[in-house]
Length: 527
Image (cartoon, rainbow, N blue to C red; front, side):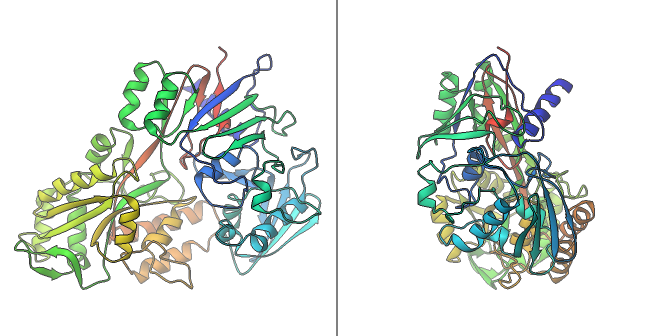
């Protein structure tokens, strides 16, 4: 275990330039990866999508990055500090060069922020949210950047950990169309762009002059294979060396063929969300089929349904062990999570007693909606929960539909309770989006489709988010999470696992909870 952990840490560090990459200097090696990620564009600032973030991280780098525990670590910036309520200073790494040989410095950071803020327009410019709070950015010397924010922004370093740094050009900003040619791809990362066939392949070559040490692989080829079964088949046939997002049902078969499997709980949760805004809800009736007032407005009903949900069964049986039962938005142990929030075994008798106390001794009927094929085990999860809730006296009709249909119907108010998901770079992002009161001016409740409102929680979360990133902030966010989960506006179900598999050319592979697939996570074997 110690050797494996050291290898994994080395791979993770090499992925972001913290140390020299592990190398096999006598052998040129190609890594072939089957990925579900379909690269949308070569523009590093076009869209906030995992596929773009993961694949373009080979070419471009950030000032800071999140490690496997979602903690901030130095990247192109070696240190950062807050000068005042509205000013931050970032010290940049020396002796870093772009892949065209030009030196990296503060002007590149200024150029990058300005490109995101003022050049890219919708539907591109997906990274603007991370730079929205920046009032100005200046190069106080060649390796120092000072950022002035519009008001207090204690999470600025976290926001900047999402932004790839581009080389400044005297000619001005390049368009997305120009960058998509590939000729202008020029970052500080460990791999150089070679070629790209949209929807088919992305080929990269080693950056021999990478500041973090020579990368492990001489060439990297990503084959875009959207079908999970086809990715597994390619790995089994040894057409690729590594495959991402392996279905849990295929893991045992993959292992039997001598391939290795790695998994990690995703920095996300899938949950049930209640409509609390309307007085009456579609397809929520008494046992005789008569409409009833919204039962979910009573916290006892929400708690009873949580008590009647066997989350461990979902993780063990529906996700085949490649899921972790959930009681909050992110897996326990990540920043901002609470050790006090743990999933409890179902108690159907207590659930029935609580429903009776709330005025539903005979239960009631409802439809439980969700997507089919959007997330691992989503349709099967609805079926299992229906069986759970039936034991507490609730008649459930599962409704699993394609995600596009589900989204349309939910927006049209056709559902009373539904299956959803949330992920992000920090747990407070999900708290702020899913359960904070909807308020466009404050930027809260963007995913609060249930119209849940809790002023005490809103206040606790808002205060926590004024604290600079670190242990004090994490503790305050955890307390806010405890407060809102006691009210049960959602029922967290599980954190599904990201699963990857690899063959003999790869010695070890380090998974990231945000689900990124990169060559830097793979350590070559000595075979």
